[in-house]
Image 1 (cartoon, rainbow, N blue to C red):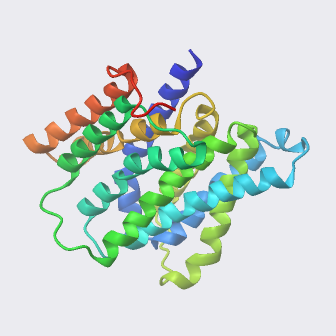
Image 2: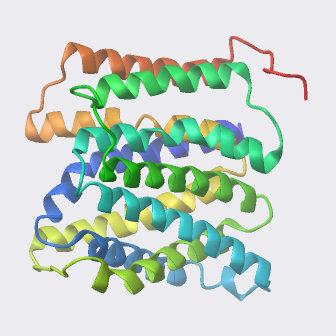
Length: 291
């Protein structure tokens, strides 16, 4: 029952992130990307410090702070490389390459935990990855460009964040882990935004609401939920649930912007859902190798 609730909460995270895609895209017209990340995570860090002030009075070891900081650095690097890479590649290619997070998590987890993923998990990940490609790609990849490589680094960082969070969530309270990782991400962005790109900020109401909504819902709440939920489910299953984000993003775009879904993209959405079901139902119960 705990795992079911945890995975339902992770799916809710994915829904929130997918539904705010249009809002963030519109806000970035008025604010530079890394500054937006700094403001978003700054709002989230302040909110979590206030919310969990009582829990933070408990003894905190250097190892706990280090674990939370490491998790937060991976989280920031994911957003940083994805955002910078988007300047040198197309949004379609960026979406698919970022989706490779789903593929990288089981292999990172195998390195950390020294185990092998189930065959059903690998099949589900493969099916979901093909589906994500059909959903997001409009043409062939072509040559590998600088933006593609940067985005791939972002996908690797997101995968490392999921695995690292799963590791430290077993030994730390989710309150401290949430505060530490979000604060580390905010500090990283604040140290970098002023020299990695021209600073641009036009205080439109849209920017204010985008920072508030993404800071409180998509960051403070969402990553607190993830820190709690990964105590009850695996990193691989977390990554595969998060593969639903492109589906939710398209639904939002359709309802708000009227973007249509081609037959190819619709097939991709079905394959993503099929991949999730493969991991959930485990029709193949054997491991790839005996452990």
